[in-house]
Length: 405
Image (cartoon, rainbow, N blue to C red; front, side, top):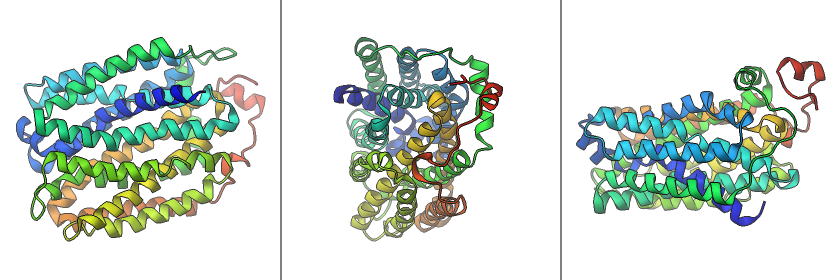
């Protein structure tokens, strides 16, 4: 896969996922305009993440059945529909509905990662996943900068109007510029593709990586869903665009982990994961200093997003290497943990801040990070790249409805 196609797929991921997280820097004005109480504001973000969870279970398995390029285009069109509904929402219920729709079809991210992995040579798969996944982080964090700026100039509704237009433009580019997703052999039926996910939960590698993702993104969500609350109050009293600019710090950390895919290709995914999770715990010590120092906050954000990106890319590389014939399904199953963790972090961060201030929110985020590290330790150190995973017997593959070769 050449560089411009990687860039296009990374952009698709970034734009799609930004619809789930765009509300983070504008929680206060958005909640105020829609009549959502401050202690429930976290549900504005959590709604999109719950929709995302539903899409992971119901829609991502389609990537192992249908042409992924067409799926990417259709899902982008529906992200645009959800964003349009949110932008035009006259009341909270309509905004929540639009956020849920945009969240459901933001799972185009997983279909895109599976598509990128499937058309990449095995030796470059980690590098490709690393580049495309960097688009996800750029969308989550860079989108904060754009959302904050747009909201301050034209209001929070403009954020979702721009998202809708961008999604439609990318849909046209995907159909015009990317090749069809041609896969040898007979594809799984939809029911079998969904049913095969059940078998993953009994596998040590999948369950370990899934639980790590759950706690990893609960920690990530605690930071980014709750950060605007203390920054908009005393002593900082920052505006939406200033809060959004902190996304640049997270983006710097995430892009600094662009080599994570190369480390995975070199067989170092497992030890690097442990180091990154330890770094994640340490990052919260700096983040907790927000009431006294913005510089320590920025340093903590860089470290946190560096750690998150390294772990996330390493996990996806291990899982797609272990299950190349159903990359979309295995990524979708893994991302169920991601979505649940993100929703947990979004829903609990505002409550923790309301009850115990930023110290309470920081202890919550650090606790999630420590749990992720504990899972890595308890799960054992499987050789990187899934080297010790034995291939399934033809009989086992047949029972799960998979091709015999």
